[in-house]
Image 1 (cartoon, rainbow, N blue to C red):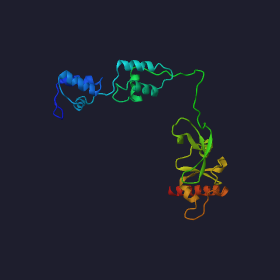
Image 2: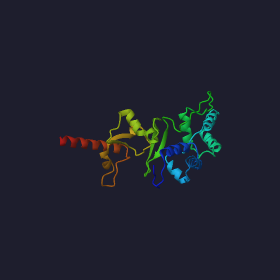
Image 3: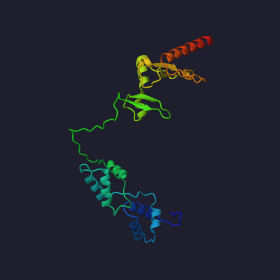
Image 4: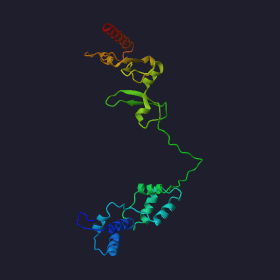
Length: 243
């Protein structure tokens, strides 16, 4: 076999070098190779010959050390890896990572022993409980709404909370249609009493804001409620006329 540098090796030399390299350093492999086959190859040449061979290997001494370490109570993988690299520093080509050593141990069925008191179970307390209320300000505006925590099932915090006025409305009248939204008659978004809430089509938003005029029909209490009923009546008339 001839490589890109014009160096040739027999199949026996190739197999022997790659096998020997699995459990020895590059310098040791180079010396042993030259001695066995009467060659004068450099470390770079042998390294190229053994390219692709995994560099980390585990001797019997290493495995015995690992088996002993995992039996020590409260010995973490970080501590085991540090001790492992220090103990076999002269053998290892480079320090072994925690994940690699742990994977090797898992393949062998080795697990660390962590001391736990059966009489004590620690549960990390949630910051908010289901049913808790918080006031949040909408980004980009000064609008403030009351949010209620409804579940702990989702990692995404936004999915765990819902606006209180929507919950109040749905409790009395069912789910809000997608093309509708809830308005506050008195203009106070923190007043979630059902008497202060109205469910209106999103198309009413412009009209409630007065359209092109500077007048607004939001937050006027009974006037807002009456104007909403007028808009609903006009919408019904248009739908009948179109039919």
